[in-house]
Image (cartoon, rainbow, N blue to C red; front, top):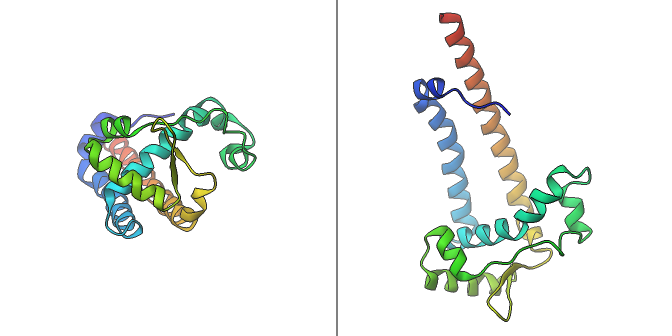
Length: 164
């Protein structure tokens, strides 16, 4: 994996930030709409989801020829997923614990997460279907932004090499 040359980034910071910021701002606006203006709920759900699947993805799915989607569809991830709790979500996000608890109640009402007897937060199997169209659009937009970013870095790198 290549790293971005620090000097190239410094000399083109505004341009590269513009590309990243365009994707990020657009994504936040789309999240705002998808969660009826409740970005905190989106952050709480995203944090729970990332924590839930992270260990399995890193240890198994990333290098698997089957890929995460097929492995999850087959239920192979269930033995290796990790729950978290409102306190750890609060610590990870900076969102006050009581706010996290309110968002958790709302997410449970949406049938997107479950709360175990000891407060363990986990995703409801199949809940990602609700976000399929959103995810597909996000992936397409991210790919466009990443491609644009990569092309601009390559252009600027070539231009700086030509000036030497």
